[in-house]
Amino acid sequence: MNSLNLATTQVRTIMKRKRSPKSLPPPPSTPPTPQTQTRHSTNVSKSRVWIPLNITRQELSLPLTFPTGQTFRWKNTAPSQYTGVVGPHLVSLKQLQNGDVCYSLHSQSQSNDDAKSALLDFLNADVSLADTWKVFSASDERFAELAQHLSGARVLRQDPFECLIQFMCSSNNHISRITKMVEYVSSLGNFLGHVEGFDFHAFPTLQQLSLVSEQQLRNAGFGYRAKYIVGTVNALQSKPEGGEEWLRSLRKLELRDVISELSKLPGVGPKVAACIALYSLDQHHAIPVDVHVWRIAQKYLLPELAGSKLTLKLCNRVAEAFVTKYGKYAGWAQAVLFIAELPSQKALLPSHLKTTKQQTPTKRENREEAGSSTMHIVTCSFPNLQSWLTEVDNEISVEDMGQTEVVNELLAETVVVADMEDKLLPD
Image (cartoon, rainbow, N blue to C red; front, side, top):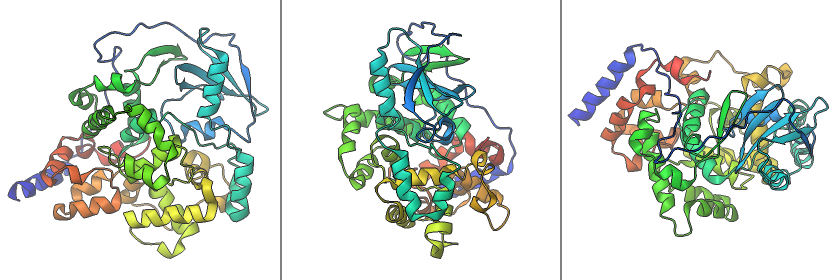
C-alpha cells in the first residue's frame, strides 16, 4: 500500500509540471514486418474517370459521413472529394454540385463491378435515409428540423476487424492522435497507392498485424493500448473459425450477445463495443454513449437525469431511451444528433437547434468532452479506482490490471504527464 501511495504522489507531482506535448511518431516509411512491400505508383490522374454511383445528397453527404468519427482512414483529397480503401479497392468519392455522388478507382486492374458492389455495401446503401428519417421525424420534432440541415449523414458498414482496431485506438484519446495511430496500423498493410499527398494501404490482415510486437506499438506511441491490441490479436487468432470470420459472424447475433462477445476481448469495454456493433456489425440500434450523447439524452430524452453522474447503469438507460423513441435504427438517429453537436456543424445550425450549456465549461468538462478519463484517473482516490472506472468509462479493464499496474501504466503514458489541455482537447 505504501508503494501505491508513493506512486499516487508521483503522479500528482508530475501533473503539476507543464511539459510541451510530444507528437506521435509518424508511421515508418517501411512497416516493421519481415518483408518490404512493393510500392506501385497510382498517383491520381488529371483526367480521372468518374462513374455515377446513383446516390443523391439526401442519401449521402460526404462531409457529414466521413469526418465524423466513424472511420479514421478516409482523407479529404480535394474539394468535395474523399479518398479511402474498401477491401482491396482504392477509391475516391466526389459530391457534384447537384449533390449526386460519383466514384473513381485508382487502379486499372480492379474490377469496376466488384469495386462498386463493395463500395455500396460499405456505404450501407440498402438503407434508405429518406424512409428511415421519416420515421425519426414523426417521433421527434427537433430531429425533423435537424434533418433539413444535416441530410445525407449516413452510418457506414465497415469491415469488422478494421473497425475493431480503429476504435481500440480511440479509447481515451482525441481525433488527431487516433488518426496517427490508425495511419501507423494501416501502414502495415499492402500499399495501394498515393493520392494528393496521402499514402493508402489495405488494412492489415490479422496475420500481418500479429507480426507486430507490443514494444513496437509502444514505441509508436500507443501507450497502454499496445498491450490490448496485441492481446486482442492473439485472442482472435485462437478462434477455430478464424478471427476475422468470427467477427463477421457476430452480425447474426442479437445486440446484447454482440456486446458481450466483444467485451471479452482485451481492452474492449461497452462503449467501444457499441461503436463496433453500430459501424460494422449491422446492429443499427446500438448506442455508443459518450459525454455528448449523455448531454443530449439529459436535455431531450431523460430530463429527470439532469445533474446525475454517468454510470454504466445509466448508459444502458440512455440506450433504451433512444431505442424507445427512434426504433430499430436508433443508432442512426443518435449519429445525426451527435453530428449536430460537432463544432463544424453546430455553427451552421439555427440558434434554437443548438444544445445550449448553462455555463461556460470548466477545464474538467472540456477534458471529459475530449473523451479523456486519464486526467480523472490520476486525481481520483486509488482505493476507489475500480468502481470509479466502471462508472465513467469501463474501457480500461481493471479486472485484468492490478491497481499498482494501473498507476505504472499511467506514469509511463505520455498523455498523463503532458499538458492536459494541449494533449487531450480536440484540435
